[in-house]
Length: 239
Ligand code: SF4
Image (tube, rainbow, N blue to C red; front, side):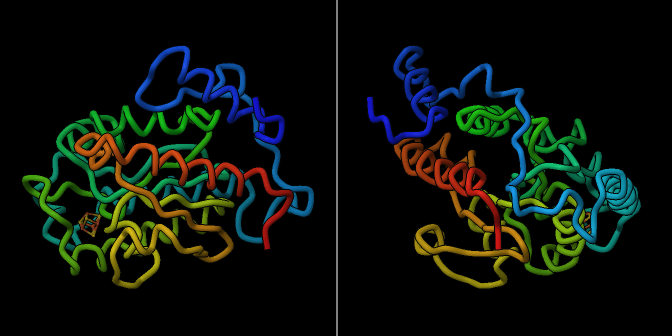
């Protein structure tokens, strides 16, 4: 065993060996623990106390529910504003709700969501400890790609959610989320290999879980991305 590896990684890899999972499973004990912010991080930033962050997220969810700024507002079953901890240090951004999400009003609850939950557990966290949102808050018909005008109309909601939660690390899942947050075009494979920031947060690019379900050979690459996100969370402070 490599003694330089962080304990969470050894535990996750051991779990993978023991259970033969497609995605390494995180330590069961670590899943519920609180991750302390870095020592240099103020207890409350100027924008968000925990209560203010929760209030801001609730207000955004109500605005999303009332929104008809693009045509998707008229054909959705339920809006899907996002879900998670207002104090999350890790923020996942996906593309758009699918059928199951549209039905339940919650993000990543279908097959791709189950894989995302495994991915989160693989780095020793529970879903409740992170925040999960999409670029689009309403389902595109037939799960088609988001249109540029729809992404532009919806982007302010996501940016306000990020500002409210004020995470240390953002993980974008797939090309649409990455391009929306970085506001630039480019192949996902190239952007994945670069270092990014989004406001105060580090941004890590990885593959969408739906793509990983279709291309399981890429799970190893996604696992490397998640390890990088975890190592950024473990860093003592952020710039
Ligand atoms: S997708 Fe976004 S901009 Fe379009 S109606 Fe839904 S909440 Fe509004």
